[in-house]
Image 1 (cartoon, rainbow, N blue to C red):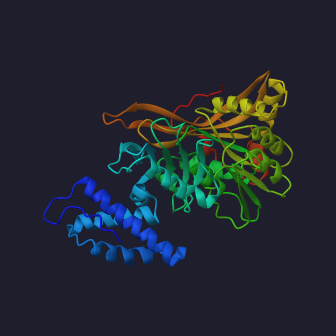
Image 2: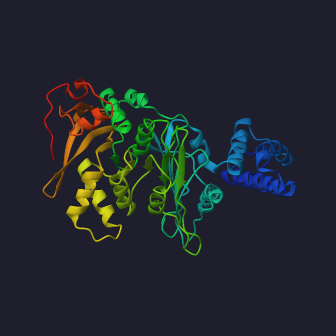
Image 3: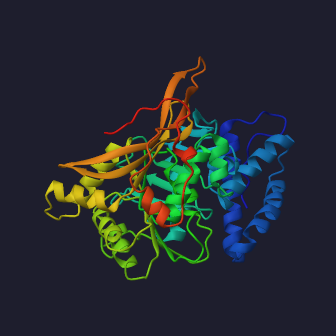
Amino acid sequence: MTSPNPSPASKSFTHQDLARLKKYLSDNLLRALEMEGVPAGDRSAFVRKNIIQIYEQTKLRLPDDLRKQIFDQVLDDLLGYGPIQSLLDDPEVSEIMVNGPKKIFVEKNGKLSKSSVTFDDDDHVIRVIERIILPLGRRVDFDSPTVDARLPDGSRVNAVVRPVAIDGPSITIRKFRKDKLQAEDLINFGSLTRQMADFLQACVKARFNIIISGGTGSGKTTLLNVMSGFIPENERIITIEDAAELQLQQDHVMRMETKPANTDGQHSVTIRDLVKNSLRMRPDRIVVGEVRGGEALDMLQAMNTGHDGSLTTVHANTPRDAMSRIETLVLMAGMDLPLKVVRQQISSAVDLIVQQTRLKDGQRKVTAVTEVAGMEGDIIVLTDIFKFNQTGVTEDGKVLGEVNATGIRPNFTPRLEAAGFKLSADIFAPKASAQNTRR
């Protein structure tokens, strides 16, 4: 083994010295792993043991804290995901955003901040991307510069490389919660009220078709996880996602995930393909992580032909925007349908829209629960059952306000009662005067 020959112990170590030492340790450990043919399950113990021996051969005497820092970085590179491993291990970090090798941002408690960790260069970032995607059989390169993937713990990953990523490779990771949230947790967080939770639970159990609407990072998937927990144990559930991240606890769950095209651009399996296939699998419930294309038409048709109780999410900032978004997605299916027919399909298929919002101060909150009340002429009628009213903002930027019932009982109340759910009038009683909101 060739010594990195950095400065002697009496001299302070420069950044270049430490970089050479890290490379020396990594290269020799990789060579040892290849020569010994160490099985994947034994790699961690082998690396931790041999890194000490290789370091001692350098005759260097780094301070204990600096040596530990170097060892940790080498171990993260060889066994984990490089510099971002420490962020993945931090329970307070919910999202990690790598904007090139030297700019890494994190979200903690709804707030964005710049991290002190960095990559060495673009190649370092790409090595981490490849470590994430290779076990999944996915690829990212000049011809296919974007990729969606997931970590073994279920965290959602998106990566973008050059030429699309102008300032260097990008990684965005939405971390997976190891503890599955329950409705009670959302109530304690202030995301839901008790009345809303009871109402939504009744709607799910009564097999209503529900769309969760919200912007990026608003918490749609978390809410979908919580609401899917209301589905009875004796029902067969089919889940369909781009990257599997739903955490359904029921026993009879069949999970499906899309597949990207191969290097020839063929043999992809899309959300739409999976929605169509799920109809042949005797589902009691179909749960689609997100509709973002022509599969919206297949989903509506499924809802309208006996597959009640379906759940999905859509990107939109208000319930009305959600309806417009679904109209657009249905038209993307390539069917030449009049807009009125599309709206009739939507109004007859969808029972409820639950609007999830990330407020300016980072709070994630259900800001509207809205009934799809039918058609008036060419317009879909939406009626708010619960609505968030913002009353102000504190000096430190915290948004003030509360969710309140509007006082309107939904038109589908008889269907709820027929399914065995006679909800108390208190659920729909506003705490203060609430206007009848019909849009």
